[in-house]
Amino acid sequence: MTESTEPEQTSAPQAAPLPYLERLTVRLATGVAQLDERTRQRHAQFLLAAQRDDGGFAGREGPSDLYYTGFALRSLAILGQLDGPVAQRAATFLAKQLHAQVPIIDFLSLVYSGRLLELAAGVDVFADAASEWRRNVAGALERFRRADGGYAKADEGQSSSTYYSFLMVLCLQLIGQPVVEPDKLLGFVRGRQRLDGGFVELGPMQRSGTNPTAAAVGLQLALGALEPSMRNCVIDFLAEMQTDEGGLRANTRIPIADLLSTFTGLLTLVDLQATETIDLAEVARYVQSLEVETGGFLGAEWDSGTDVEYAFYGLGALALLKTLDANAG
View 1 (cartoon, rainbow, N blue to C red):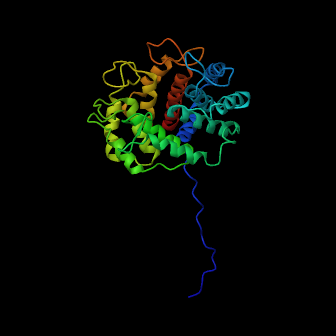
View 2: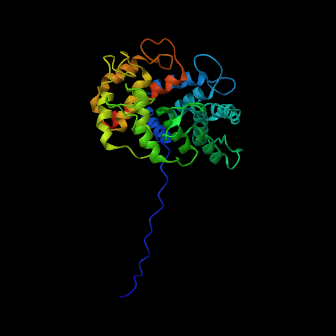
View 3: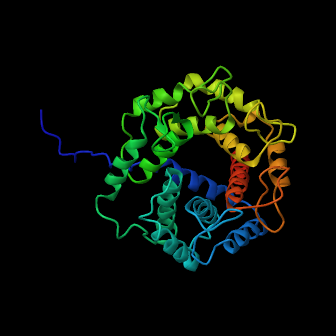
């Protein structure tokens, strides 16, 4: 037998998958790009006008904070408006928060906002951070982990939170650190599913909610470990959340829909490839009914004000609906 002279075939190294939040941003940007120019400009101007002198963004009252700044930058990113002076001013605000002691939800906003600025505008907020900061951050987050494998909302909290466990996974992915004992974490979150098919935020609860269900599914998807057996139950639960208004409600005790639940529920059904279980035309009508002519979105039909957080939920819902239209075509 003669030796082959053919060159040895080697497979190219596989690129690491994008973190969950970055994948979501790409998906939403694709959908937003299909909105008409007038709609995009209206909401872009609303968001740009909301930036404070310190470079950050605020809620409906109070000073700039990381939470609202994160939503504003996410919205500007999917609109293709996160660049130039806007990005530089936001980076200045974020840099001043690097050494502040903040809740985990604000820290996630800081990390993701910094990542967005790097990707969209080439601004590295963490350029001067110590070389070990990612590992140090991951170690610090472990103080929130509880014996059941989940993560609590705060240092002193004893009960693991479905939502905050999801946030921890997102944060660890963004800083390129591994999730500790992922199988135990998955066991924890799967234990939060209830007989109605949805998931609860805290252990003692029996009535599921749209938003903890979205968080539980998102956590499993982020780890690439969604159990097929729970898919149909989740789909049935979310389908029951659509109201006569067209949007989705937070839980069965609340008779009216809201924009947050509509976005998270729609996103989950898109991820589960089950949007046929709700009336998408009615969802679109509901979201559009909350859109304000001067930019931004109301949080629900009873709401009377706008903010950058609900601008993101509204734009996100419209983006998902556009993406579904394109796929259907």
